Length: 181
Image: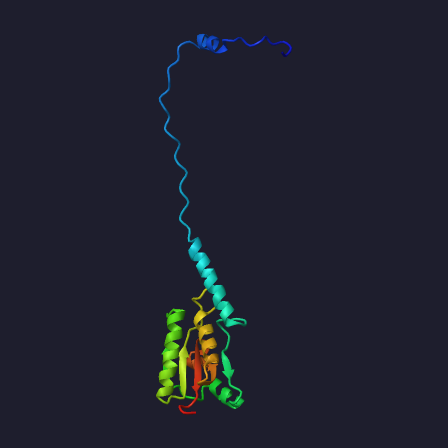
């Protein structure tokens, strides 16, 4: 028991009701508005995109090519002067493939088919337009794909980014091994 207080009465509730008098019940209040549902996210799509990008970078093996980088490659048995002449645009492109707006999978298929057809036709120099990748999110996908595929092909002797008048770093000139060689 605390000092200065009287012990609680057993019927305090009855005493309270008699002191208040008659009460009227309020109408039930409407339920508070429900919290808005969160907007559906694209978490899985974002994860898939990140995973695809990681896989792409892993397949590249080395540092990816940036949009302004020059592509260049020559086989050991090809003289350096050939690559220099290719860089200057001294070889005329006899055929051309434009990969703009193609998906990576479609571009890979188109490039393989194009190079096979060009070699069968006896074409020695072709131009492949891959674009600079400015619309890509960071890494120019088609440019890196073209670089990787051309390096892996036995029928490609050398390649170099085209001179500015022929597409610059958005296109590549490719020298093909002669048929039967």
